[in-house]
Image (cartoon, rainbow, N blue to C red):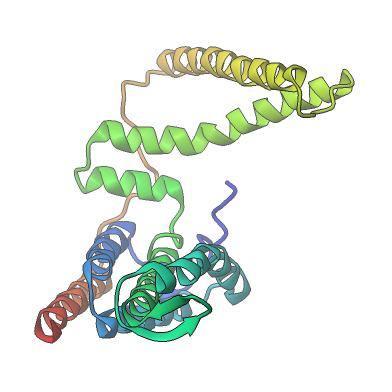
Length: 251
């Protein structure tokens, strides 16, 4: 499947059980998301960077994803220092740059990059099918797990169906412009995509029912947690608890 670029590999994190990585990622990202301390956010970013190196991922691809994420944090740096209340540390024309705004933008940047790197190292090293089945084995609601697996499987097919309709419209000399004909045509395209998706869902449901599907997927890749998996998850939870305790001490 596409968008699973990091799921293939032979590193420790690729061999670690997906349930272990889910629990570790949840604990660490929760601490990073709630922290108000620069130290904790910095330590989390360092830990996430180490995990990325442990996963032996393509650094160029990782940096490209970080660039996409940081394209949004740039807007925070452009707005928060000028609009956040606090003591002015410099002036930019009639506007003052507040220290609280700079600190807030820096904290958000550290937390954002740390969480993204954690998710890449711990979650992107497994494929979506394994994540869905692991969530089910962690006793998440079965319908939500099926919704995740079906959504990932068919969202690309729906996109392909829409592209097929757009290609057919272009073959009929459709050229998008800023007029009512374009808006009406795109409305028809979206409508036909929904209709075709409904028909496809009906056919898939009938085919799966004929094959005995009764609301449960079985994975051929199920395995029990090894000793190294247990050591890993205990270590990650211990680190998360340590960061949380440090947060309470410094605040």
